[in-house]
Length: 96
Length: 138
Ligand SMILES: [Zn+2]
Figure (cartoon, rainbow over the protein chains, first blue to last red):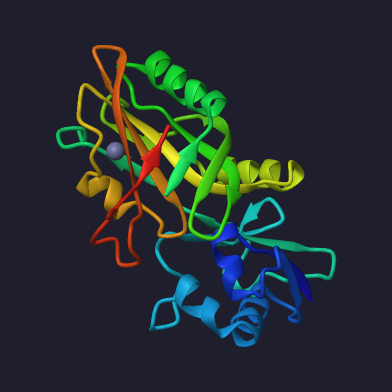
């Protein structure tokens, strides 16, 4: 079980809740439980193939799950998951 | 529609001008009403792009996570991201689009010769193929 912080624009899919607690022993299980309980969230976070969208990073407390075992990272009751987008930009000619 | 209050607006313009000729970036906190958003606070974030920053910016997810935490503590919402275009119009470039997120409003400030010139706001879509303009009031 873990708490998941919901970014403002996604709260319309979680009945306005700014955080939700769902079951699961790993990050993968928690994310599956989240999108099962709130199916409209699925499209926001996952592609149709079930992969995390390119702009979505998942943090377990203060750590990017990519560095701690991704979906297999254990999630305890006291843990907090956050969904954080990757954002960057640039102008033509600025790629060098 | 997105409205930026005078205080955060002044902070964003000052950040853009101080970072010139480099791009600056930051987060906008405020509130979301039915069909409008109000920015009440701007948080300057570090441009983490590893290279020449005159035409590139990159936000660290850790910094964005901290901005979201700050918003929650202040009973506000993280509603948008801003960045500057030094000596360039305030448009949403292909690189901006390909590295955007449909959850937030994106304000672009044009800083010409070190001075604020104009600004626009964009709402990128899911597939990162389009970013229609959002009405911006400042
Ligand atoms: Zn840009």
